[in-house]
Length: 159
Image 1: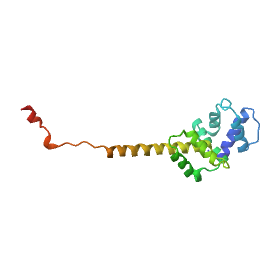
Image 2: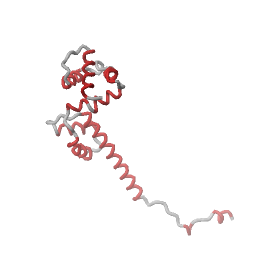
Image 3: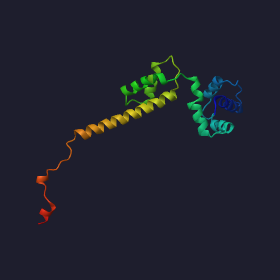
Image 4: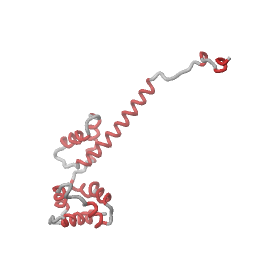
């Protein structure tokens, strides 16, 4: 799949819905965002048929590649997301996403991408928390010890 062919497939989909616009990615994206979920039903199958791909492939290409052209790159700001998650590890993910977006209102980040990064960071942090708690528990416990001299031998008990 490439961007031009994908754009053309989306354009054809919109034409099939009697939406007549110019074949420009930004205008196509705008129209898609104006449609309800019900109106968009079947879009990935339709575009997949044109492109020779399945619905999952076209869906993933749209979200992970094609529509990213309309957003600012979040990669240089990743450390800010990590910092927000570390400061608020038990806060709801959507709140953390909004906190990040509110911090950079001049940028146009993909909410979906920021949400994915927040979820990954929360997952990594929770694994670190669980691991560190397990280590603390295992090192702080008294452990199990046996005094061999005070043990009763089975053979002595049977006599």
